[in-house]
Amino acid sequence: TQYKHFNQCSKDTERLMKLCGGNQLYVTGQGDADKDLEEDFENWKQDLWPALTKFYDIKYEGGDNFDFERTTRLEYDPNSSTPFDPYPYKKRLEIGQKNPVWATVTCNRELLGDSTERSTRHIELSLDGFDLYYEAGDHLGVYAPNDDTLVDQYISRLSGVSDTPFAQVAVKGSQVNMLPAKCNLRQALKWYVDLTYPAKKSVLKAFSQCAQDEQEKEAFMDVLRNNDAAKAEFHKLSAKLRNTFGWLRKFGSVQVPADVFMEHMPHLQPRFYSIASDHKAQPNHIHICVAVEDGGLCTPYLQR
Image (cartoon, rainbow, N blue to C red; front, side, top):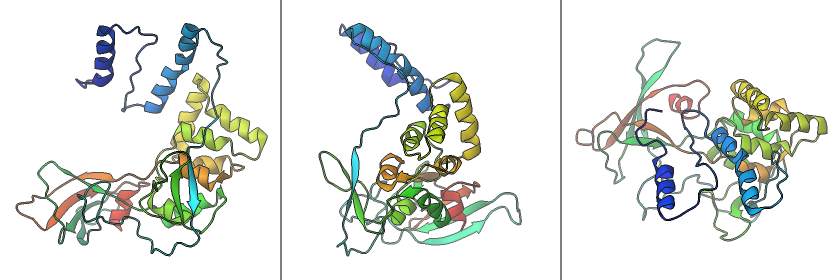
């Protein structure tokens, strides 16, 4: 990498711990976001446990770990009567990623004329009623819901599906809802779960344990192991299958319980776009220019 401060925090921590007399038991791991952070971590972890067990003189069985411990649960509330609002705005808090607001689109036009191969949209949003200031170089975060067809596809691969509203809470500790609002499964998948994100190996390892067919289960697990042949096959399939649903469709006997699915899938995050307007010239509007990406989440939504 050409980045001047690449992994600087880990380098500084290692240096300072040595200055304080620390004894380094294992090499410091460094991940590169331009490649595959999860694979970087898996490669680093592979020799970590043998090093620690050797130092502490304890037995290490080795191998790939497919076990997972439940950390969240769904607390169903059949008596809930609160109308569903995916992002309830809290007026006493500052507008931001954890407190988004609904904004009205006042302009959405194509910038590439009659082009049918590509699409770039100019989008204007009204700031009327919001105390929001921005400067040149700032970014606007946009939350976009998943497409209803994709939501239906995922639901077809899950078990324990219910229309009853629930909160997602920790198995131990605080019982505060981890989601912005109580919702049923369909609403959760539409608004809160990132269904288009490339599948993470750690998520697929958990889901592989839900296969009903033992041979298919073994085949699924083999692709997720931490050896060179498995890594090559995983990367090939990831490019072909694209997201988690592609994997669930390939290994058709997998039926993931809804609560397990909600625990392991990443929460939907805002997509950020450079602001293309100036607050002094447009104090009541904010503009962005968006290149539409096929198969993406936010840009096709903005295109519509």
